[in-house]
Image 1: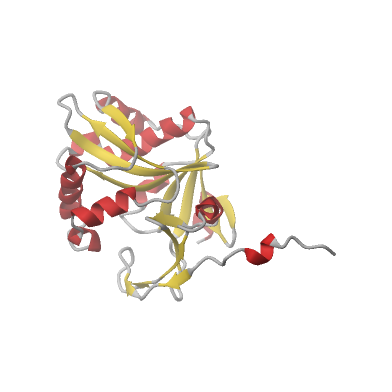
Image 2: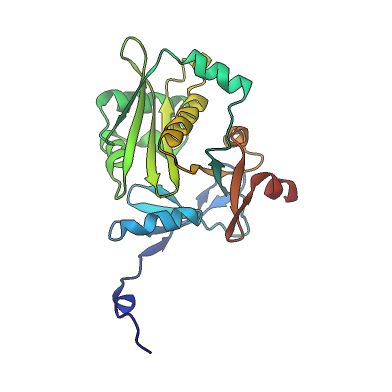
Length: 246
């Protein structure tokens, strides 16, 4: 039987297993990840994303924590999603903002907002130690199609920004940061709602929101965005079914 010789010439993707570190979501647990460098084969990204991987710069990763499967990949059906009354109020509160979608080339204003955000929300985390070069690399080092969605007030002041990847089946929210002093805007929720609007405009099927950890306050907001699916045991399943079973 003839075989396609290209199959034998394909270079295996380099994989790494990270060192263990303290889990940021569950007290007393350790975190470990399996990571894949996709810089030599960026076309593999979408398949890995559909298998629950997330991107950071030129790497995609999945948790590989011993004796723990708490991190559940979460995606939302764009066409079926409907904003709640509270979400509709948040959209109205931010109707004065102007959206800008650009290449992932951050400005000094983006860096200042990022530093203020991590200092306020994650001062004890690794990101709080990132300098300007680290931040720029996190934003613009991407081997796939990535955009920076920024929101400005009427005085042209940056109040929030989210890094997002385009996939063949959807949009993936990679990282967001915003002005924490304007709590009345609920910018975190607003920027997710705006990503839904972008995905709908482009007729994309899914909005990928990263990992959900049941019981984690940091991840609780994701349950507000439904109907959702969780990648569990090798397939995507209705989120409510997986959570109910656990």
